[in-house]
Image 1 (cartoon, rainbow, N blue to C red):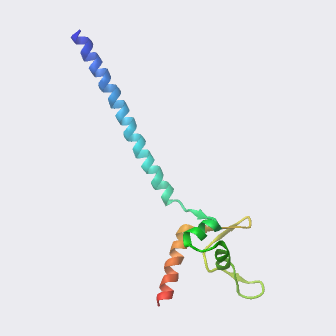
Image 2 (cartoon, one colour; image 1 turned 180 degrees about the horizontal axis):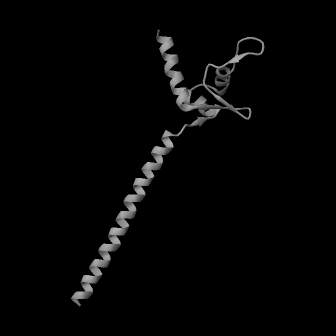
Image 3 (cartoon, rainbow, N blue to C red; image 1 turned 90 degrees about the vertical axis):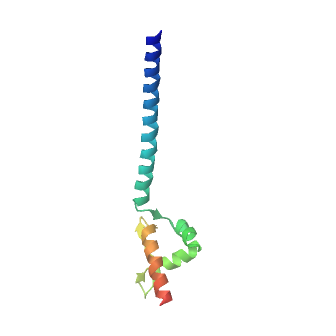
Length: 106
């Protein structure tokens, strides 16, 4: 009887140990995935940039294409054009905002 209790105790300990290890590894891998996701470049659409900056999508479009003449366009806001769709890198937008704030203050 005593041998059965020892065996049962060892079995319960092993099961608890395995479950604990699984829970710890699961929580650690979830945090790692979030950090990787945060460090990746995030491309925003026109409406997402409008929400991010607190302006209308039409104003984002005006900032995207400003005419310098007949066929020449420059951009106030950093963007990438893929298949006729504009995407805006979030990190570049943040840097652009800092530069715009610096030039306005000076």
